[in-house]
Amino acid sequence: MASATRDAHDGEGVEFIHEDDGSITAKDIETGLASFGDTKAEALRMLAEAIELHEGGGEPVTEEDLEEWGLEDSEPGDEELPDFME
Image (cartoon, rainbow, N blue to C red; front, side, top):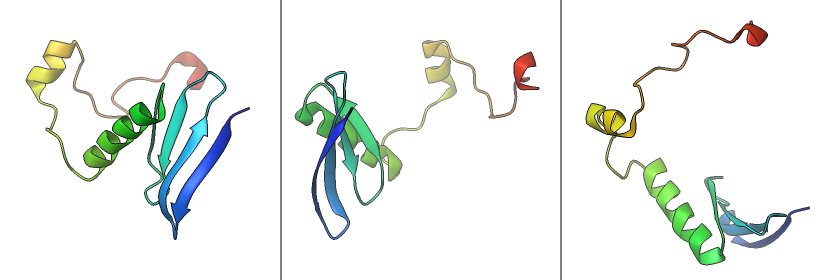
């Protein structure tokens, strides 16, 4: 069972959740965003990146990026559902 520690004041701060597998999840109380890592420091770094991206930071993904990564540009709902989901 995971356990949590909270360091929040007035709906702000970070909650740390110690997962059963040994990883640590850092959750931003204000936004509800969360990320994880092997240590608190790593979880906080990943959470900071998630918050930055959530707030519009970072670079947009381009067609060239998708091609380089071997991914296709598709919109949700573009693909047919598998038989078991119809």
